[in-house]
Image (tube, one colour):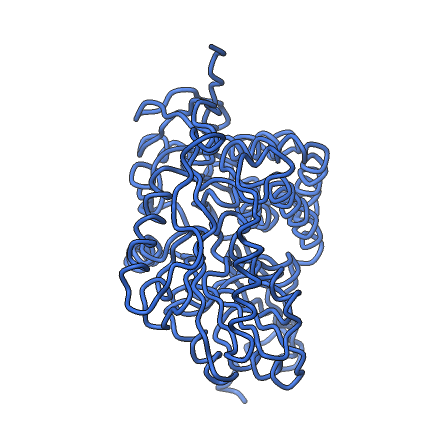
Length: 497
């Protein structure tokens, strides 16, 4: 048997193999006999040491000119470009999605690096006229301090880079807690940042569970910002505790995204969008298409097309270039999906039209595979139409017209990504105006954002912050207003007006 690869935390400028909570193994969800590595399981002591190091490093890092900080992040992007295939293959082994998607995951990190590097020569503030003569006014962005980054497993490169790269360019230091399902990608990202020139102690990595590492990070008084991507349930707890501590909290949470297909839509194009939106990443995306809202005039035809194509999707190991859908990330995630299939079958009027079973034999015997699953006859109030499943389960809802379609789409607690397929420009603009979501696609699936546009949602999908774009700077900077009075006398603002 091959010797297991041992990975380490990076704390206070040192690679550390041991953790106060022992170690944990990370396995390939497509083949659980393939152990990615052994990782140290950190706890409150590691968090304390990492935060202290980040706080110490902040004193000097914030004084490095922003364009110089940005050059380091640009170099990180160059290294990511050079190692794109290597990183993609590791990520596929680690969390299961197909190589085409993990290559895209790395590319998001590359795009983010170059975009964030550009912001290092901008970080725009404002200059404004003042009320009095010989007085100058401006606002500037200032770094916040130590940032705690808590990231999920489904985009193990893209999402950490969305957070870490702009935070570093802004002059902050970082303590990074990755998901326990994808720690190897996190280690590689930290290695790349150090190679690119990020000073030791500016970046710290602590692997471990949410209770052992995430909670102490949220609680630590020297952590100024928590940026969290994950479930709405956990996000609510972080927001509540962060509010008590008057700590800045950025949350990107769940979704129950829907694609509308109108009667005038290009059905072939809409079909491609529905398949990719619902079954890409095995449905394990916060932007996944979980609901398909179809106009009654084309409902039966479109559902037949959808089922026929979904039957042909090749499910297997993501390292095989022919695979179209990989496994679920873990045994527990597959159990969750199985439970929702049971819920769907028990709900009145819903019909299991395709799939609904775990794949457990042959090439699927060693992994957490599940069939592409489609429910028809779903009513908007049903649990499978309201709750985030995070798996390859699509609920189809029939509607009479655009008004009903938009009402149904808006009828959940979430509001991340949305989509409408139509050839009617008036319908498209009504959808853009009336859909309650942070992202709306016209004639495209409910996928995520490009780096130059804000990413985030409304309602229970988050707390108003946006990642990517220049809007991410508002998470990782404080505004400072500066007045320079060169009149040589006391000018008392509104009192003397």
